[in-house]
Image (tube, rainbow, N blue to C red; front, side):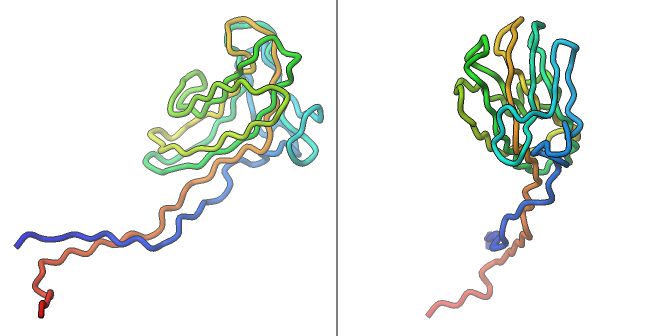
Length: 178
């Protein structure tokens, strides 16, 4: 007899604890970094999605200068990310880039080029970690040297808890037919 395998998974898929300490930037810039002096980051009230503050990322010249936040992951685990971004139309370039990546200059696993101006844009997705360090990266200007600003609010990263899985293998010995 050939075995038959059935996988049962009735457990709910829940999210783990929030991995971003202050994704609403109410207490400051929450350990975001800039990769050069051509990019500045600050807590701002200019454009806010919720709460009182957002993160303001300003690129002043430079080549694809960016701001980034480092997160620690567990390889093989699935994570849900979400963030809101806003770009005023007063900038030079229509497009800006938001990434969740293995290095702060990489494009994988997620790279979104956003061209909406003067409105908040929510980006939500999932990735399976293949490394223990990832970065949330903001490029205010989607071109080489440029001067532009983007605002970020409500940054969230949480592990997707997959629940309990059970596997049963049977050979049909207990199967009765009438």
